[in-house]
Image (spheres, rainbow, N blue to C red):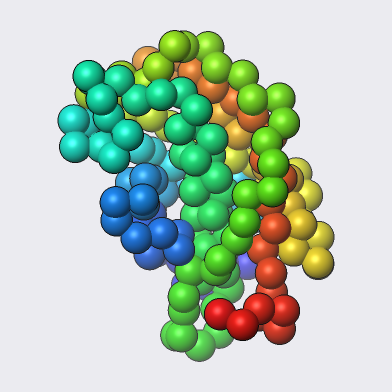
Length: 156
């Protein structure tokens, strides 16, 4: 049960442990206990933009940061006190990464959906992710393996 949830959509930055210019996810559109939907606005100032294009391999980072936003949003929503820092996590691997476009286009708005398939008490997780453009066209998909150390196992 989420007790401290903000009104959605909301900025994603507070829920991911990345700083500019590496914070690539712009907004959280929806989030629940199992799934998150985020948006990414691609403009010419985007960190990876070159000649109005962004390489599709950056989609893996879009997915990973969206999964991080899911973790951060749920951690904040279930927080009892007001001391909150976006949790640190690690991308362990990517399986079944498939691209259906040669590149992402500057000017597009991408929607990333990540569904949590597994979240163990040891911090291991698996997410099924998709990236679509504003027309609903599937551009990329993958399954991510992640690790999020808990507070007792990290020095940060």
